[in-house]
Length: 303
Image 1 (cartoon, rainbow, N blue to C red):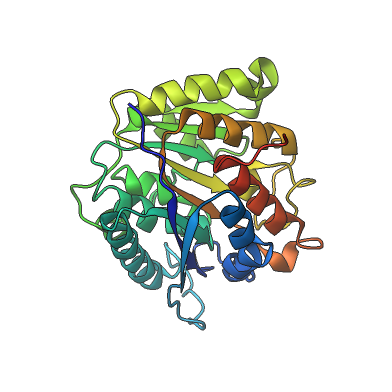
Image 2 (image 1 turned 90 degrees about the vertical axis):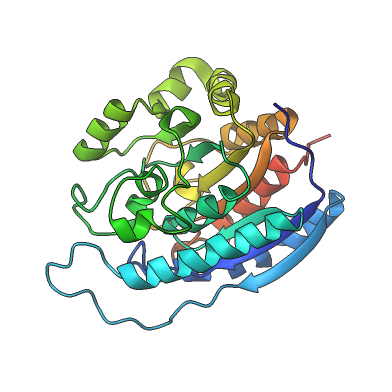
């Protein structure tokens, strides 16, 4: 299996913060663009079409006391629209590059890609595993449920985005960089047999071996691979501007090396970069890291 190299990139911004319930992550798409994203991709020979940002309601009422899933209706609405837009761009032969926003937007991105790639592999770079459901969540924040939803588990309104029949298979998903896993998530991952490469695995075996194993899993019987990268997968020293930082993450070079290996295998059909929060950032460091990682995944090299 080898995805065709696509020189045509459609950028879609999704300034959604309600999945994380923390102000600032809605500014992420503009911060990433402002760190010279277009110039970087154009220098690599890509044709860029920036579709701007999806419309997100700016002021919602605070969640009611005891409400299990915060801001569910707006998150469903935005992700349904995102799935349509991603699907429409892929229909034109474009590579969708989605900029978040919080990680709940992965539901819309992946469901849109699944309209075209029936058997999709997913590499999920994240400090967290995001497989909580409305039954296991402690916070009620939907950005911690996005991977479960695209696997077909969780609140019916989330699972139904983009069609009930479109979902990932657990054997086609890998998580890389995890180091903060809730008890309910741990049980879910074991039950579904999802391969998780924790920071312990990266420390023990190195990023090269982890990525080679991960890429074998996500390309086994699939028709393309989606990259879902949460900037909190990196160590907070490298990426301070994230909503839920967890110490002991991937280094700058480990993260770039992983992206470089993805480019070499030429397997990606779509990608998203999420959870850049400029209000928590230091001198735009995290947005610049996001753009540099995007550069690496699209072929930028030191020499």
